[in-house]
Image (tube, rainbow, N blue to C red; front, side, top):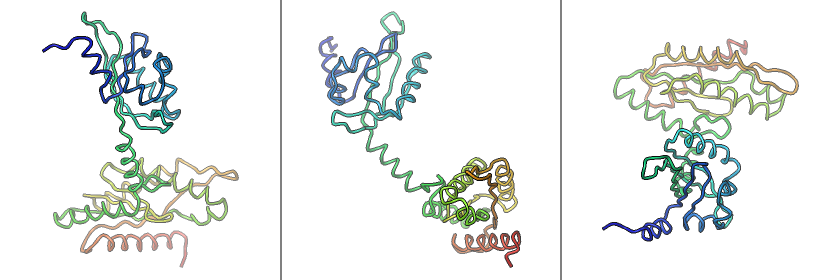
Amino acid sequence: MDLNLIEYKVIVETAPNLIWRSGLDAKCYYFNKTWLDFTGRSFEQEFGDGWAEGVHPDDLERCVTIYMENFANRTPFEMEYRLRRYDGEWRWINDRGVPAFDEEGAFSGYVGSCLDVTEKVEGHILKEMAQKDGLTGAFSRQYLMNRFKSAFDFAKHNAKKLAVAMMDIDKFKQINDLYGHLEGDCALKMFASVVKEVIRQDDLFGRYGGDEFVIIFPNSSVEMAQGVIDRIEKSLKTVVLNTSETEIEISFSVGICELTDENNPEEIIHKADNMMYENKKSKYDLG
């Protein structure tokens, strides 16, 4: 049977989703009871642009930009932002908005529906933290080696090529000693940023420890891996680390090897590490 207006209103007001409605001026003129109970604010406080007072300051500009750009184009959107709950806690909200039209097909504003997705978002953040090195954004050593194990086993079982590069920033201890650990951290971040820009989509890049980094090149020969390394070296020459005292050019030493008869990932890592050390000795005549 058809529902009457009152029944529709009851459904919307008591829906588990936070629901809002905006008009032709893009300002909001309706919030359901679920929304108001969530924020602990009155309808008058939320009306117009008042709802924006509850959005986290770090998310507000992005939130408004997404909304206004889609409003101008009359296109659906989906975004996530933090909204302050009645108890003061910031909660992650998934907000989906769609353009609304009247009975004659004329655009009349937007209707939005929101869900609290805090646990999902925080779970994703924790997963990212476990996978990524906190300083450089490269894969953590543990996650990199897990991924490497899968790539290694696949290559061994399917007779595929696999190359590994072990990289070490040149004179990194000198940077720390002369300019401090903060500048050393900046050097690590700059190096990692350049590498991430250059490597290919399927390459795996991680921080192995200290100033040592590893790139895994699936389905690649040493020659193919060397091509990527050459591009990294070229890109590094275009940037410098600015300290309060001077400008520092970052360079690195590298050892590249290809999978042959190694029995596990650690063996090929060790082989690449030895090659890197020999190359560094030759470069700086370490004897």
